[in-house]
Length: 170
Length: 367
Image (cartoon, rainbow over all chains, first blue to last red; front, side, top):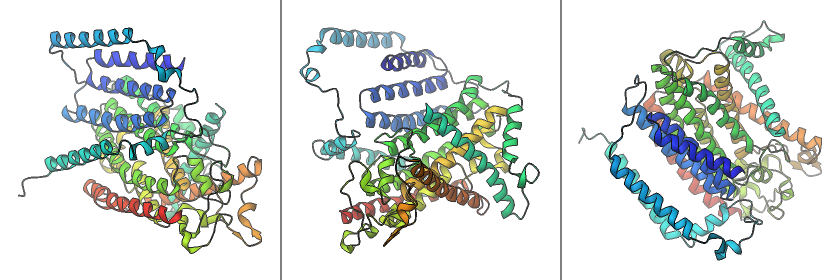
């Protein structure tokens, strides 16, 4: 039941985000989409992912988007409108993705998957949260991707700092 | 549902007391009298202020973006209030004891930022827009040293659960499921050989258990002042240049909500500071030999005495921090934008990173 509430919220506000002309409203409806997806994550026992979603996307990316919209237009502008471009290509690509996704979903026989049949309902067991398991996995099985990701972020940070520096003095 | 109502009532009464205390402290520091008319020593002043606000006309500016303008105060207050859900008020009273409470709190506070942007944009006013921009820039920047300081405490405690962190900082530690065989040592160093597990009191508070967290506490406190837009970090609301910042267009009930959210934010950051660094609901009095002061001033868990003592210690420590916040407001001048960013990025963040490293090493000494 809760799942359907979150799912409908996500779909409706996602549709609104795409259809509205006002960029700022689109940004705020993205907030509702992200919140409802976080809710769905919680229903899937992925509490850490849910909170990370809030932290990264709402606290970081969305604020950045809103800042970008607000700073790139004049403060007095009533609303920032988006325009339609590439109508044909956009429709074509989106349609192809829809067809592909629905084909693969309809083709797959989800209920016969082995790990779904053997899965226990009590996912967490004695653990209070998934943090411990995620931490251990990150430091053992996935340590290389983890470190590479952190290196990439560091490089991006340095690049941003370099671009933003005042080059007049040199 | 009961927890919701209780927390709301508690929060409202704390905020009303705080608004009164703020005026009295300000008056005291400036050698004035403060409110004196309403009630004994003017103690009903803030209640009457609220009543007056509620009677005012609700004005929505004609040129404002009406939907965003109306939604913003609700979102701001909801974000702050949602943070209270994971705060343990007593040993066995916590609205929602989820396992990743600390992380959740950090994430939910960032929702506040969206509300501020919404209010600033929706007002369609230069001052509101500038105030919101400054406020958001400041909160987003200061989240980093605050988060790093919290991370240091989390590393020492090895938990993201506020209630578990609370239990670790007192004589009742072994009563928490999962911590039955944990030991506390003086300053956290096992080599010293002084077992403070049953001594409790101030010796097991985080700032005492791992003294490096004292630095983390100071960093967190400074950053939390910035996050709740308090002086000396109040350029978002600088009266002399921005009138009132992002809430300049709000009036009546909507202003009351924003005011409430702002003071709730102060209470929330102080509560987090108390829980993570100053021993949560634990008593400061240690057991000394046969005089078991810590047990006497803790009460029995699950009974009324435990709830009363726990709430008493938590709230009194919180009020000490809140008093400090008020005092700072009337002591230090406002920081300029460049000084603000300098303090955050070049002073607090490097120190916080060093504190994290030392806290990690300290944790190795504790086991």
